Length: 247
Ligand code: BGC
Image (cartoon, rainbow, N blue to C red; front, side, top):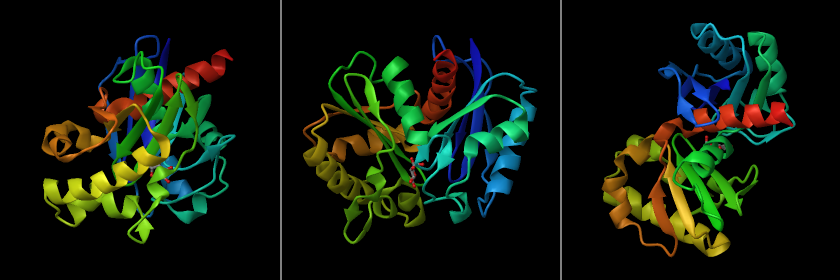
């Protein structure tokens, strides 16, 4: 079965057609810039444009950078505040005409990594972190997801961790890999203490450069880069939608 997976991020909106039985992409990914300000009408219009670029009429799975409950956005950290309580699923369906399922973007990335990627076969506690504009987090135990964990909001040096050590902060503040890694290590050590994951998987665009910062990180947990790198969200969103429909 093929599903169009979409990953709405703070800076880009990406999509590709995914074979949900293997997690493989069946099309080239398409990426559009997230409109700023990222208001509901502007983002939904861009998602519509993305779906039309594939001439897609089938099922859509969408990862969204917010707490998602019953298709509704409940937080808005790196998108316009007017998203709060918006029914993302309904907006998507009326914009595209496609049946859709929506979940948190990091949960989507985590599902992809656990099903087909770096976490495949791990039965213990696994934490998947996506480092991008913000910090996304997805926690698994025995393969089961605890949804909407917002570890990017753990306070670190007086501000939410994601404002101190996301990948975007490294670029914006022109931090060296070592300088940024020290911040990241502080965050990961804290998270390690709280959840004792056996494995931490690091995703997001920065995972392409894992050799540049993994050597500086000193943790109890095993550390792996996301196998799907920054495409995990697309793959996981598509698989999530397929499972929702199958239920
Ligand atoms: C949001 C999370 C999201 C993460 C990564 C955070 O700002 O609150 O829900 O998973 O960014 O996009």
